[in-house]
Amino acid sequence: MAEQDDQAQALQAHRAYLLRYAQFQLRDAALAEDAVQDTLIAALAQPGRFEGRSQLRTWLTGILKHKIVDLGRSRSRGASAHAAGEGEDGDSALGAFNAQGKWVEAPADWGMPDAALESSQFWRVYQECCQRLSERDALVFSTREVMGLSSEEICKKFGISTTNLHVILFRARLSLRSCMSENWFKTNHE
Image 1 (cartoon, rainbow, N blue to C red):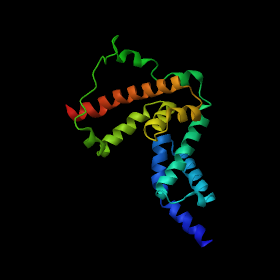
Image 2 (image 1 turned 90 degrees about the vertical axis):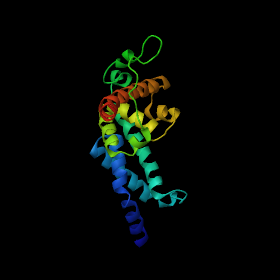
Image 3 (image 1 turned 180 degrees about the vertical axis):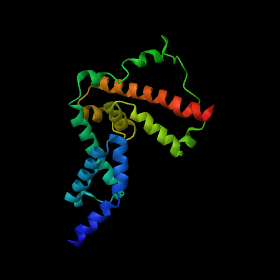
Image 4 (image 1 turned 135 degrees about the vertical axis):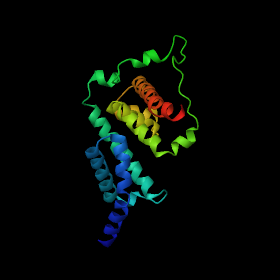
């Protein structure tokens, strides 16, 4: 019993980090709480699965990633076909490039991107820009670019085609570029 209490305390020490991670990915405090609870329950149910080849936080984050993808998949089943194939802003991507495939408006000067990554203000603006994406687009983008899942894994988990995945990623990147250019790069580099 004492060993199980020690395990629970060790897992609980990572709860705040896991909750922040889940809230960033899911954009819903209640769903994030559910995902973290499911993660901790899964870890407690099978303590022998942690083999110590990584840090405990890394192992828990891996479990959490799967819980987040499962939540996203179950929630996207209820989304309409229209919402799945089109971003919130319809076909706004069509006006971003000219007939030769070049940017109509070149991306803003990023200055020193490595320094921006160290700025908490940059990440606040980034999170605000992510909030503007549709829920599904944000989750698919995050699953690919933040969690690092492969296209094949994402398509399988979300039940979407490769073409649909690429459309979602393209629109998410375009939307984030526009938002970050307007709210970070223009205000910090003019």
